[in-house]
Amino acid sequence: MRAGGTAARRFTATPDCLSSRPMTPRPFPSPCPARKAAPRAARRVTSFAACLAAALALAGCSTVLEHGGLAPEATYSASPANIASLTDVIQSQPNDPQAYNMRGTVLASAGRRKEALIDFNKAVQLDPKYAEAYANRGLVHRQDGQPDLAIKDYDAAIRIDPNYATAYLGRGLAWRDKKQTLKALEDINRAIAIRPDNAQAYYNRGLLYQGSAQHQFAIDDFSTAATLAPREADPYLARALSYIAAGDLKAAASDLDNAVQLDEQNFAAWTSRGLAYERMGDKQKAAGSYAKALNIQQNYAPAADGFRRVGGEYGKTYQAF
Image (cartoon, rainbow, N blue to C red; front, side):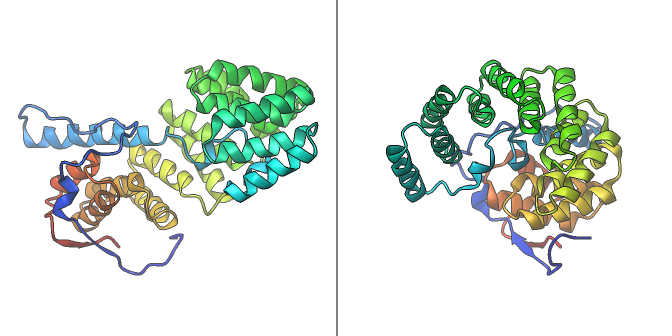
């Protein structure tokens, strides 16, 4: 069942998709590097294998379901007006650790991580038993590429509250950043045991299984995450990639239909959808998906390569559904 409507959508691949303008840097490898000539069948196999490897790499990127920090205060809008209002609260209550923690979460959500760290530092200085502030600071350290500092903060949060599921999840993600998969799995398992309704934990455990090519375990976790967070595209995209790896292209295509309807600007989902339909032999939907990905992210190599493989023509309109 699709997550959204079924109205037909058409996308035109415009020539400027291959313009000389620089592409926004992405942490995704180019999936289809140039190769010496090979027999046609061999080229198809190696091309698909390389593209699949790149598609699986997409699942490891930071997503909505990856946090492991930013306690409930993070739901507050990161607007300048709200930040100013929280600053007024701090000025009137300069010894309130919750006020600093709340402003820190809003600043972190706005990408102002250096300022957020100052607030979290102040919060734990005022209240050394403030587990949420340690976890929030841990997330900022992890986002800054400092997993060791993040682990130290998550350790502190867990010592204060041994049943703090968010801290176990955050520490697990920090261990994953350090490529300590077993430690990551242990912490995420603990987070799930404490909070079995935590979609983030199931999603991230699924990524661990996927990275280890344990695709059935990954599929099970992504399915649970999709049930718990049905309006998020990430579990559908990740599950689809494991379905592709397992050879179930029909299930993958269904998940990718859901993913692109939940997040229509997700060029990675459109590219993966193109790959699934290409492998199924539906060149019209594959070309439409690749064209949409290129309309969102110009010069995105996996989509451009796929578009060429299915005989896509720039300036032509394709039906994606």
